[in-house]
Length: 196
Image (cartoon, rainbow, N blue to C red; front, side, top):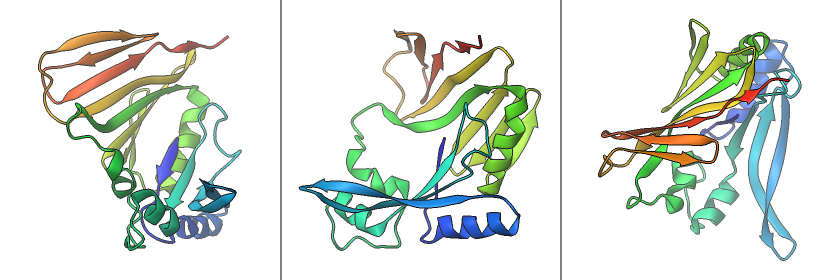
């Protein structure tokens, strides 16, 4: 699960807070190939590698200003604007039905839920429990972790639509089903993976 930081220096601030709390936090950088053997800084990253479940690991990224300017084709792009919405703006198609992903549900081992919830909380996401479900609320996004001893993996995506669909529909997609309702939301349900 990738988290995002949209403020310059945000990953380093997280690393400092995690160090103050006595938690290990890896920090590194990723480059982006622009072709011809050239590369530019892409994003600064951080993670609690090895400190959360192997079935569902986490990391956090902070776009670099050089990448934002390159990706948007705007050398004058504001270096303080590292927002995901800005980075993906050229890919957004208002004529298409899908606007964004609003929530994701993972099935995880009961023993793994608390560790991942602690990580979400470290990133500033309020966390609450509702029965076997642990819910982390981020900015404009909800992460749901459902404790399940028998299954693992992605269970469901809640999708926000740019407008109401012309008609409700249910579409099989491989081992999943996409349900588009009459409103501005769709749910994509996946077949869980059985634990051997």
